[in-house]
Every structure is written in structure tokens, then in C-alpha cells.
Figure 1: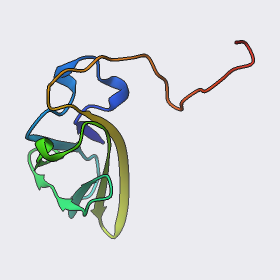
Figure 2 (figure 1 turned 90 degrees about the vertical axis):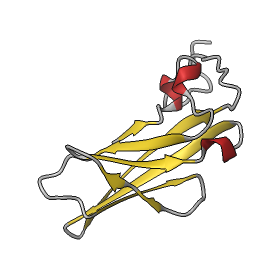
Figure 3 (figure 1 turned 60 degrees about the horizontal axis):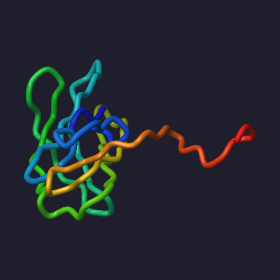
Figure 4 (figure 1 turned 120 degrees about the horizontal axis):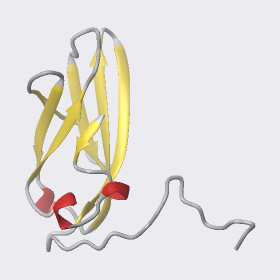
Length: 114
């Protein structure tokens, strides 16, 4: 599970978005020890995350090089020949400003009641 950066839908203010150098953090729950944990941003290449403690994995990202707006983070965990994936979207704004707006997942573009 991606624990940082915060999913865009949960970003409430500027401290919840990437605005410079940052870290990707992931929590893995498994009966077996994970062999590798990798992540990628948008269409970039997968990069390795380093094991921390208690199932936590982490790696530095160069948030200052990402364009303003929404980005996709994909995570892949390999353990005992099996693979698990997680994906989230996060927001980037190097100014640190962010105005949250209400939204839901999946997006709703219309209803029979409006």
C-alpha cells in the first residue's frame, strides 16, 4: 500500500502535495519476506525501494523535476514468485499552493437527478 505521497483525492492542503525533493513510502503486509519492491512515476522506469523497518519500504524522488499537476505512482512487490501491485495518483506543485476541490472515485460526470 502506498503511504506517501498522499493520494490526490485525500490532499486537503499544500502540505499534502509534492513540492520538491520527497520520498515514496510503501507498507507491505506479507507472511513471507518481500524480495523486491519497486515503484515508477507515470511512464518512467521502475526504481528500487529500500527496506526500512516493519514492512516499510522507501526511496527518494526528485519531485522538483516533476511537472505541476497530477501524476501516477505504481508500486510492484515481489515475494516467493508472486507479484502484488498498487497504484495511486498524487499532486505536484512546486509553489506548495494547493486548493482542494471535492471529487469522488470513480469520477461521476452526470446523474439522472441533475
